[in-house]
Length: 441
Image (cartoon, rainbow, N blue to C red; front, side):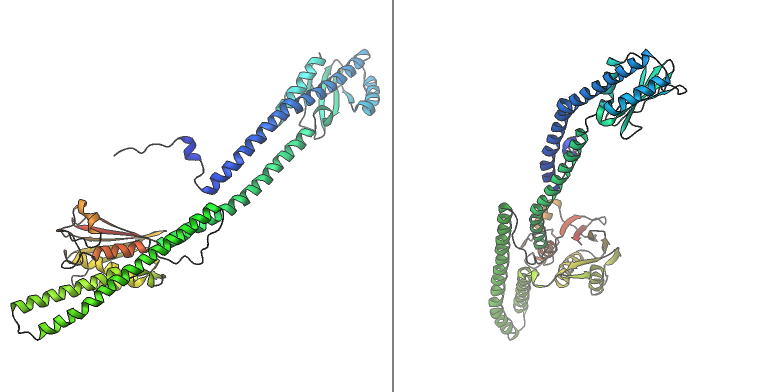
């Protein structure tokens, strides 16, 4: 068994839906642009301004520290605080009993801390420590002196440029706004495509498409109109086929009736009996033509229990009856009469070649699975595809019309496909043929 080629990592993680891919196409360039703009802003503007402010504050603290060192005392610190606080927004306090801290707290913007640390190292030779996270509006800077710890409190806006936060806020808000507008726009473009897909799926399952009308972009409307034209051509073809075969069958019944009447008045004999059998076979062929040509869409789709339909159908079979096993929820939308005709064809076909038939019907979440197994001669794998074609008569095929025109399996296959399902011919565990049907819910 050949191994399936593994998809590249990027392809596996890309969105699969049109909405997701369209959103990615719009939002990825916006996100990249925002990141590049933010990087350029921080590197070329904010970082430069912040470095300049930090150097200014570090220089002021260095001057204050030198002034304090000229006459180190608590009174000197108090006079410096009274002098520098009003004009330079620099508060100074001496704490002789404080312990010089060693642990540091990491700020969200660690680059700002690095800028301030670099400025302090260039201007202050004494041991220092600072914290930018403890106070929301101030920065705590401490210098170790012989008399204790010299505290400096500086307003945050003197060290860091406040425009950076404002810039980030508006950058995020514009991204959210653009994302919201993009989502609304993409949803408006995707909705007509989803309606077209639903209409095509309903038509493929033999349902009505309602009041579908092409809408959306020009290409989507063009696809919608092409779908409607294709639907009309298919319906017209089916109607022509039905009318043609029905007309032929009707025209042939009149001479057949005359032949039957003539044979009934003829003396009985071997030749008369053979002619009567031929006339009967011809009637069977005409009935098969009408069954094949009948438009299955005339009956309305309704919710019904397929298990109940199968139970009633098995009960009408001659002995030995097929063994029926059902499991799960078996309710689906279907045309009960045409579905009964398809299942009757398959069961009768199996009974023509086998006495032991097992029917299993299982309901899953989204589908029903029906298997019809027998222990007959089966059909060769190379001939199974042809067995489902109309007018196919295989030498070893299992066909409803053994003496007919080879339409039993074809009729069943058409009906199941009209319900959106599939019919497969497989090997049966009983060494015969398995007819496996999958029907969507």
